[in-house]
Image 1 (cartoon, rainbow, N blue to C red):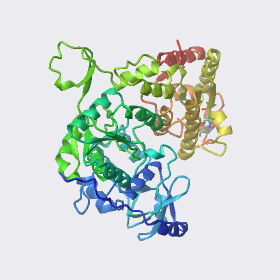
Image 2 (cartoon, protein in one colour):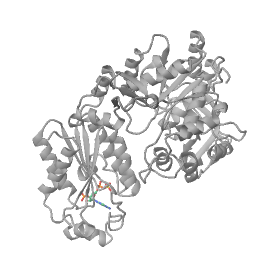
Image 3 (cartoon, rainbow, N blue to C red):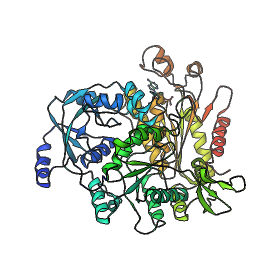
Length: 570
Ligand code: PPS
């Protein structure tokens, strides 16, 4: 395998002088405000992390990449790097036109000459790239619900890097890392890709991998976008810093990679290999279930545990970065050390210990002990600071149901009961309150309802993040919007969906506000349950039948649910 980490690789940036000029000129161009994912992609396009890509994929390259992981000229590339935009924006752009690419503050990071514009077949993309058109896969969900419907392709000219204010000293472009390796004389470098905090087992396995490959070690965590629900990168980087001290001096370094992961398992492993090659690494550790997205909607794994290793092996020579197989490390109590699970010959006579990710989260959530053989105390402290036990975290209770189902009444009762218990501030975001204070200009079209729910979700996520309790009680008729809100909130604390399952017949019979009568008479249009849809929640945390149960009992069921989830101390 060639030594790949010596010479600089091509970047898409123009010189400083040209960039100053271009920046002024680009201010007059039609501009696209990039999404967080596009900003990550653009950074790696411009700095050579996605070398040999010269821009967002054009249609021919996209087709090849989707179909068989090859660009039109045959180059291996497994992941579609596309500039998805809205139909409305696409209509304003002609082929051959230059557009400015802006970050979320409006800073122009680069320009793109649009050579291609097309409407992709997203289901095909999902099937081919992610293995299934199943929205349980986070990238498939993103593709169908967040990505724009038109793709633009064309070469990019880089003006400036996205600005990062955090951990600046730990961020390196591929060429900066290459220069560092050259300076240090590191010819063989094994990369460890990660989106999780490192514990003792990881430290052992990475150290062993480096020894086996007779290489230096690069801890190369992803700090762009990872899987929804992951530990935030600020916490993780503080944890990594603590673990770095545990390696022998000057064998190991760490650099942060602003990659937006897709959780595409096997294809993602090949992509990670190419990216690490660009960053000057000669080896990469590929583990069990590398970049796995979790379970599909039938409850099965999307990919086989070793599919990523198999695909990587097939393309290893072309990738140019040698794979180091991950060893499953376990703690052998009698010998007080980590050993590769498959090398323990006396396994019947020794005690083998391991703590799974799920068990770790449970212990953190419940404030239970995490033994020193499992993780370094500094790492555990950081994790506990970010994730206090559940009974001290913020959370959101999200009631959904028809108008007149009893949401507001039950939500009020729950609020009062929680306030009686004390400990955390409680905010009620009732449908009516929100429509008066946050969404007074909105009506009841799908677009407006979605906006209304996203606003509620945003406020609730802020409350949750800051340790409070948010109680929401809108109709929230659309499942996809409820799911999006769930994702936003679960980044900070629990999301407890409560379906107030009063039937439409019963709501209409009660008709407390007289609205159903008006809806039947056609005087209120788009009325949920009468002339507008309601997606019944498939698996809410709690479903309340209200027809023969009084309000106090319904509220009590919610409190019991919160207790059983560990959100309030028993
Ligand atoms: S949504 O769909 O979640 O944005 O709705 P929400 O903000 O909860 O507002 C629902 C309240 O608005 C009144 N109302 C209507 N509801 C449904 N459909 C239509 N067309 C409509 N027009 C007005 C109604 O009183 C709802 O109040 P609740 O508290 O649910 O009874």
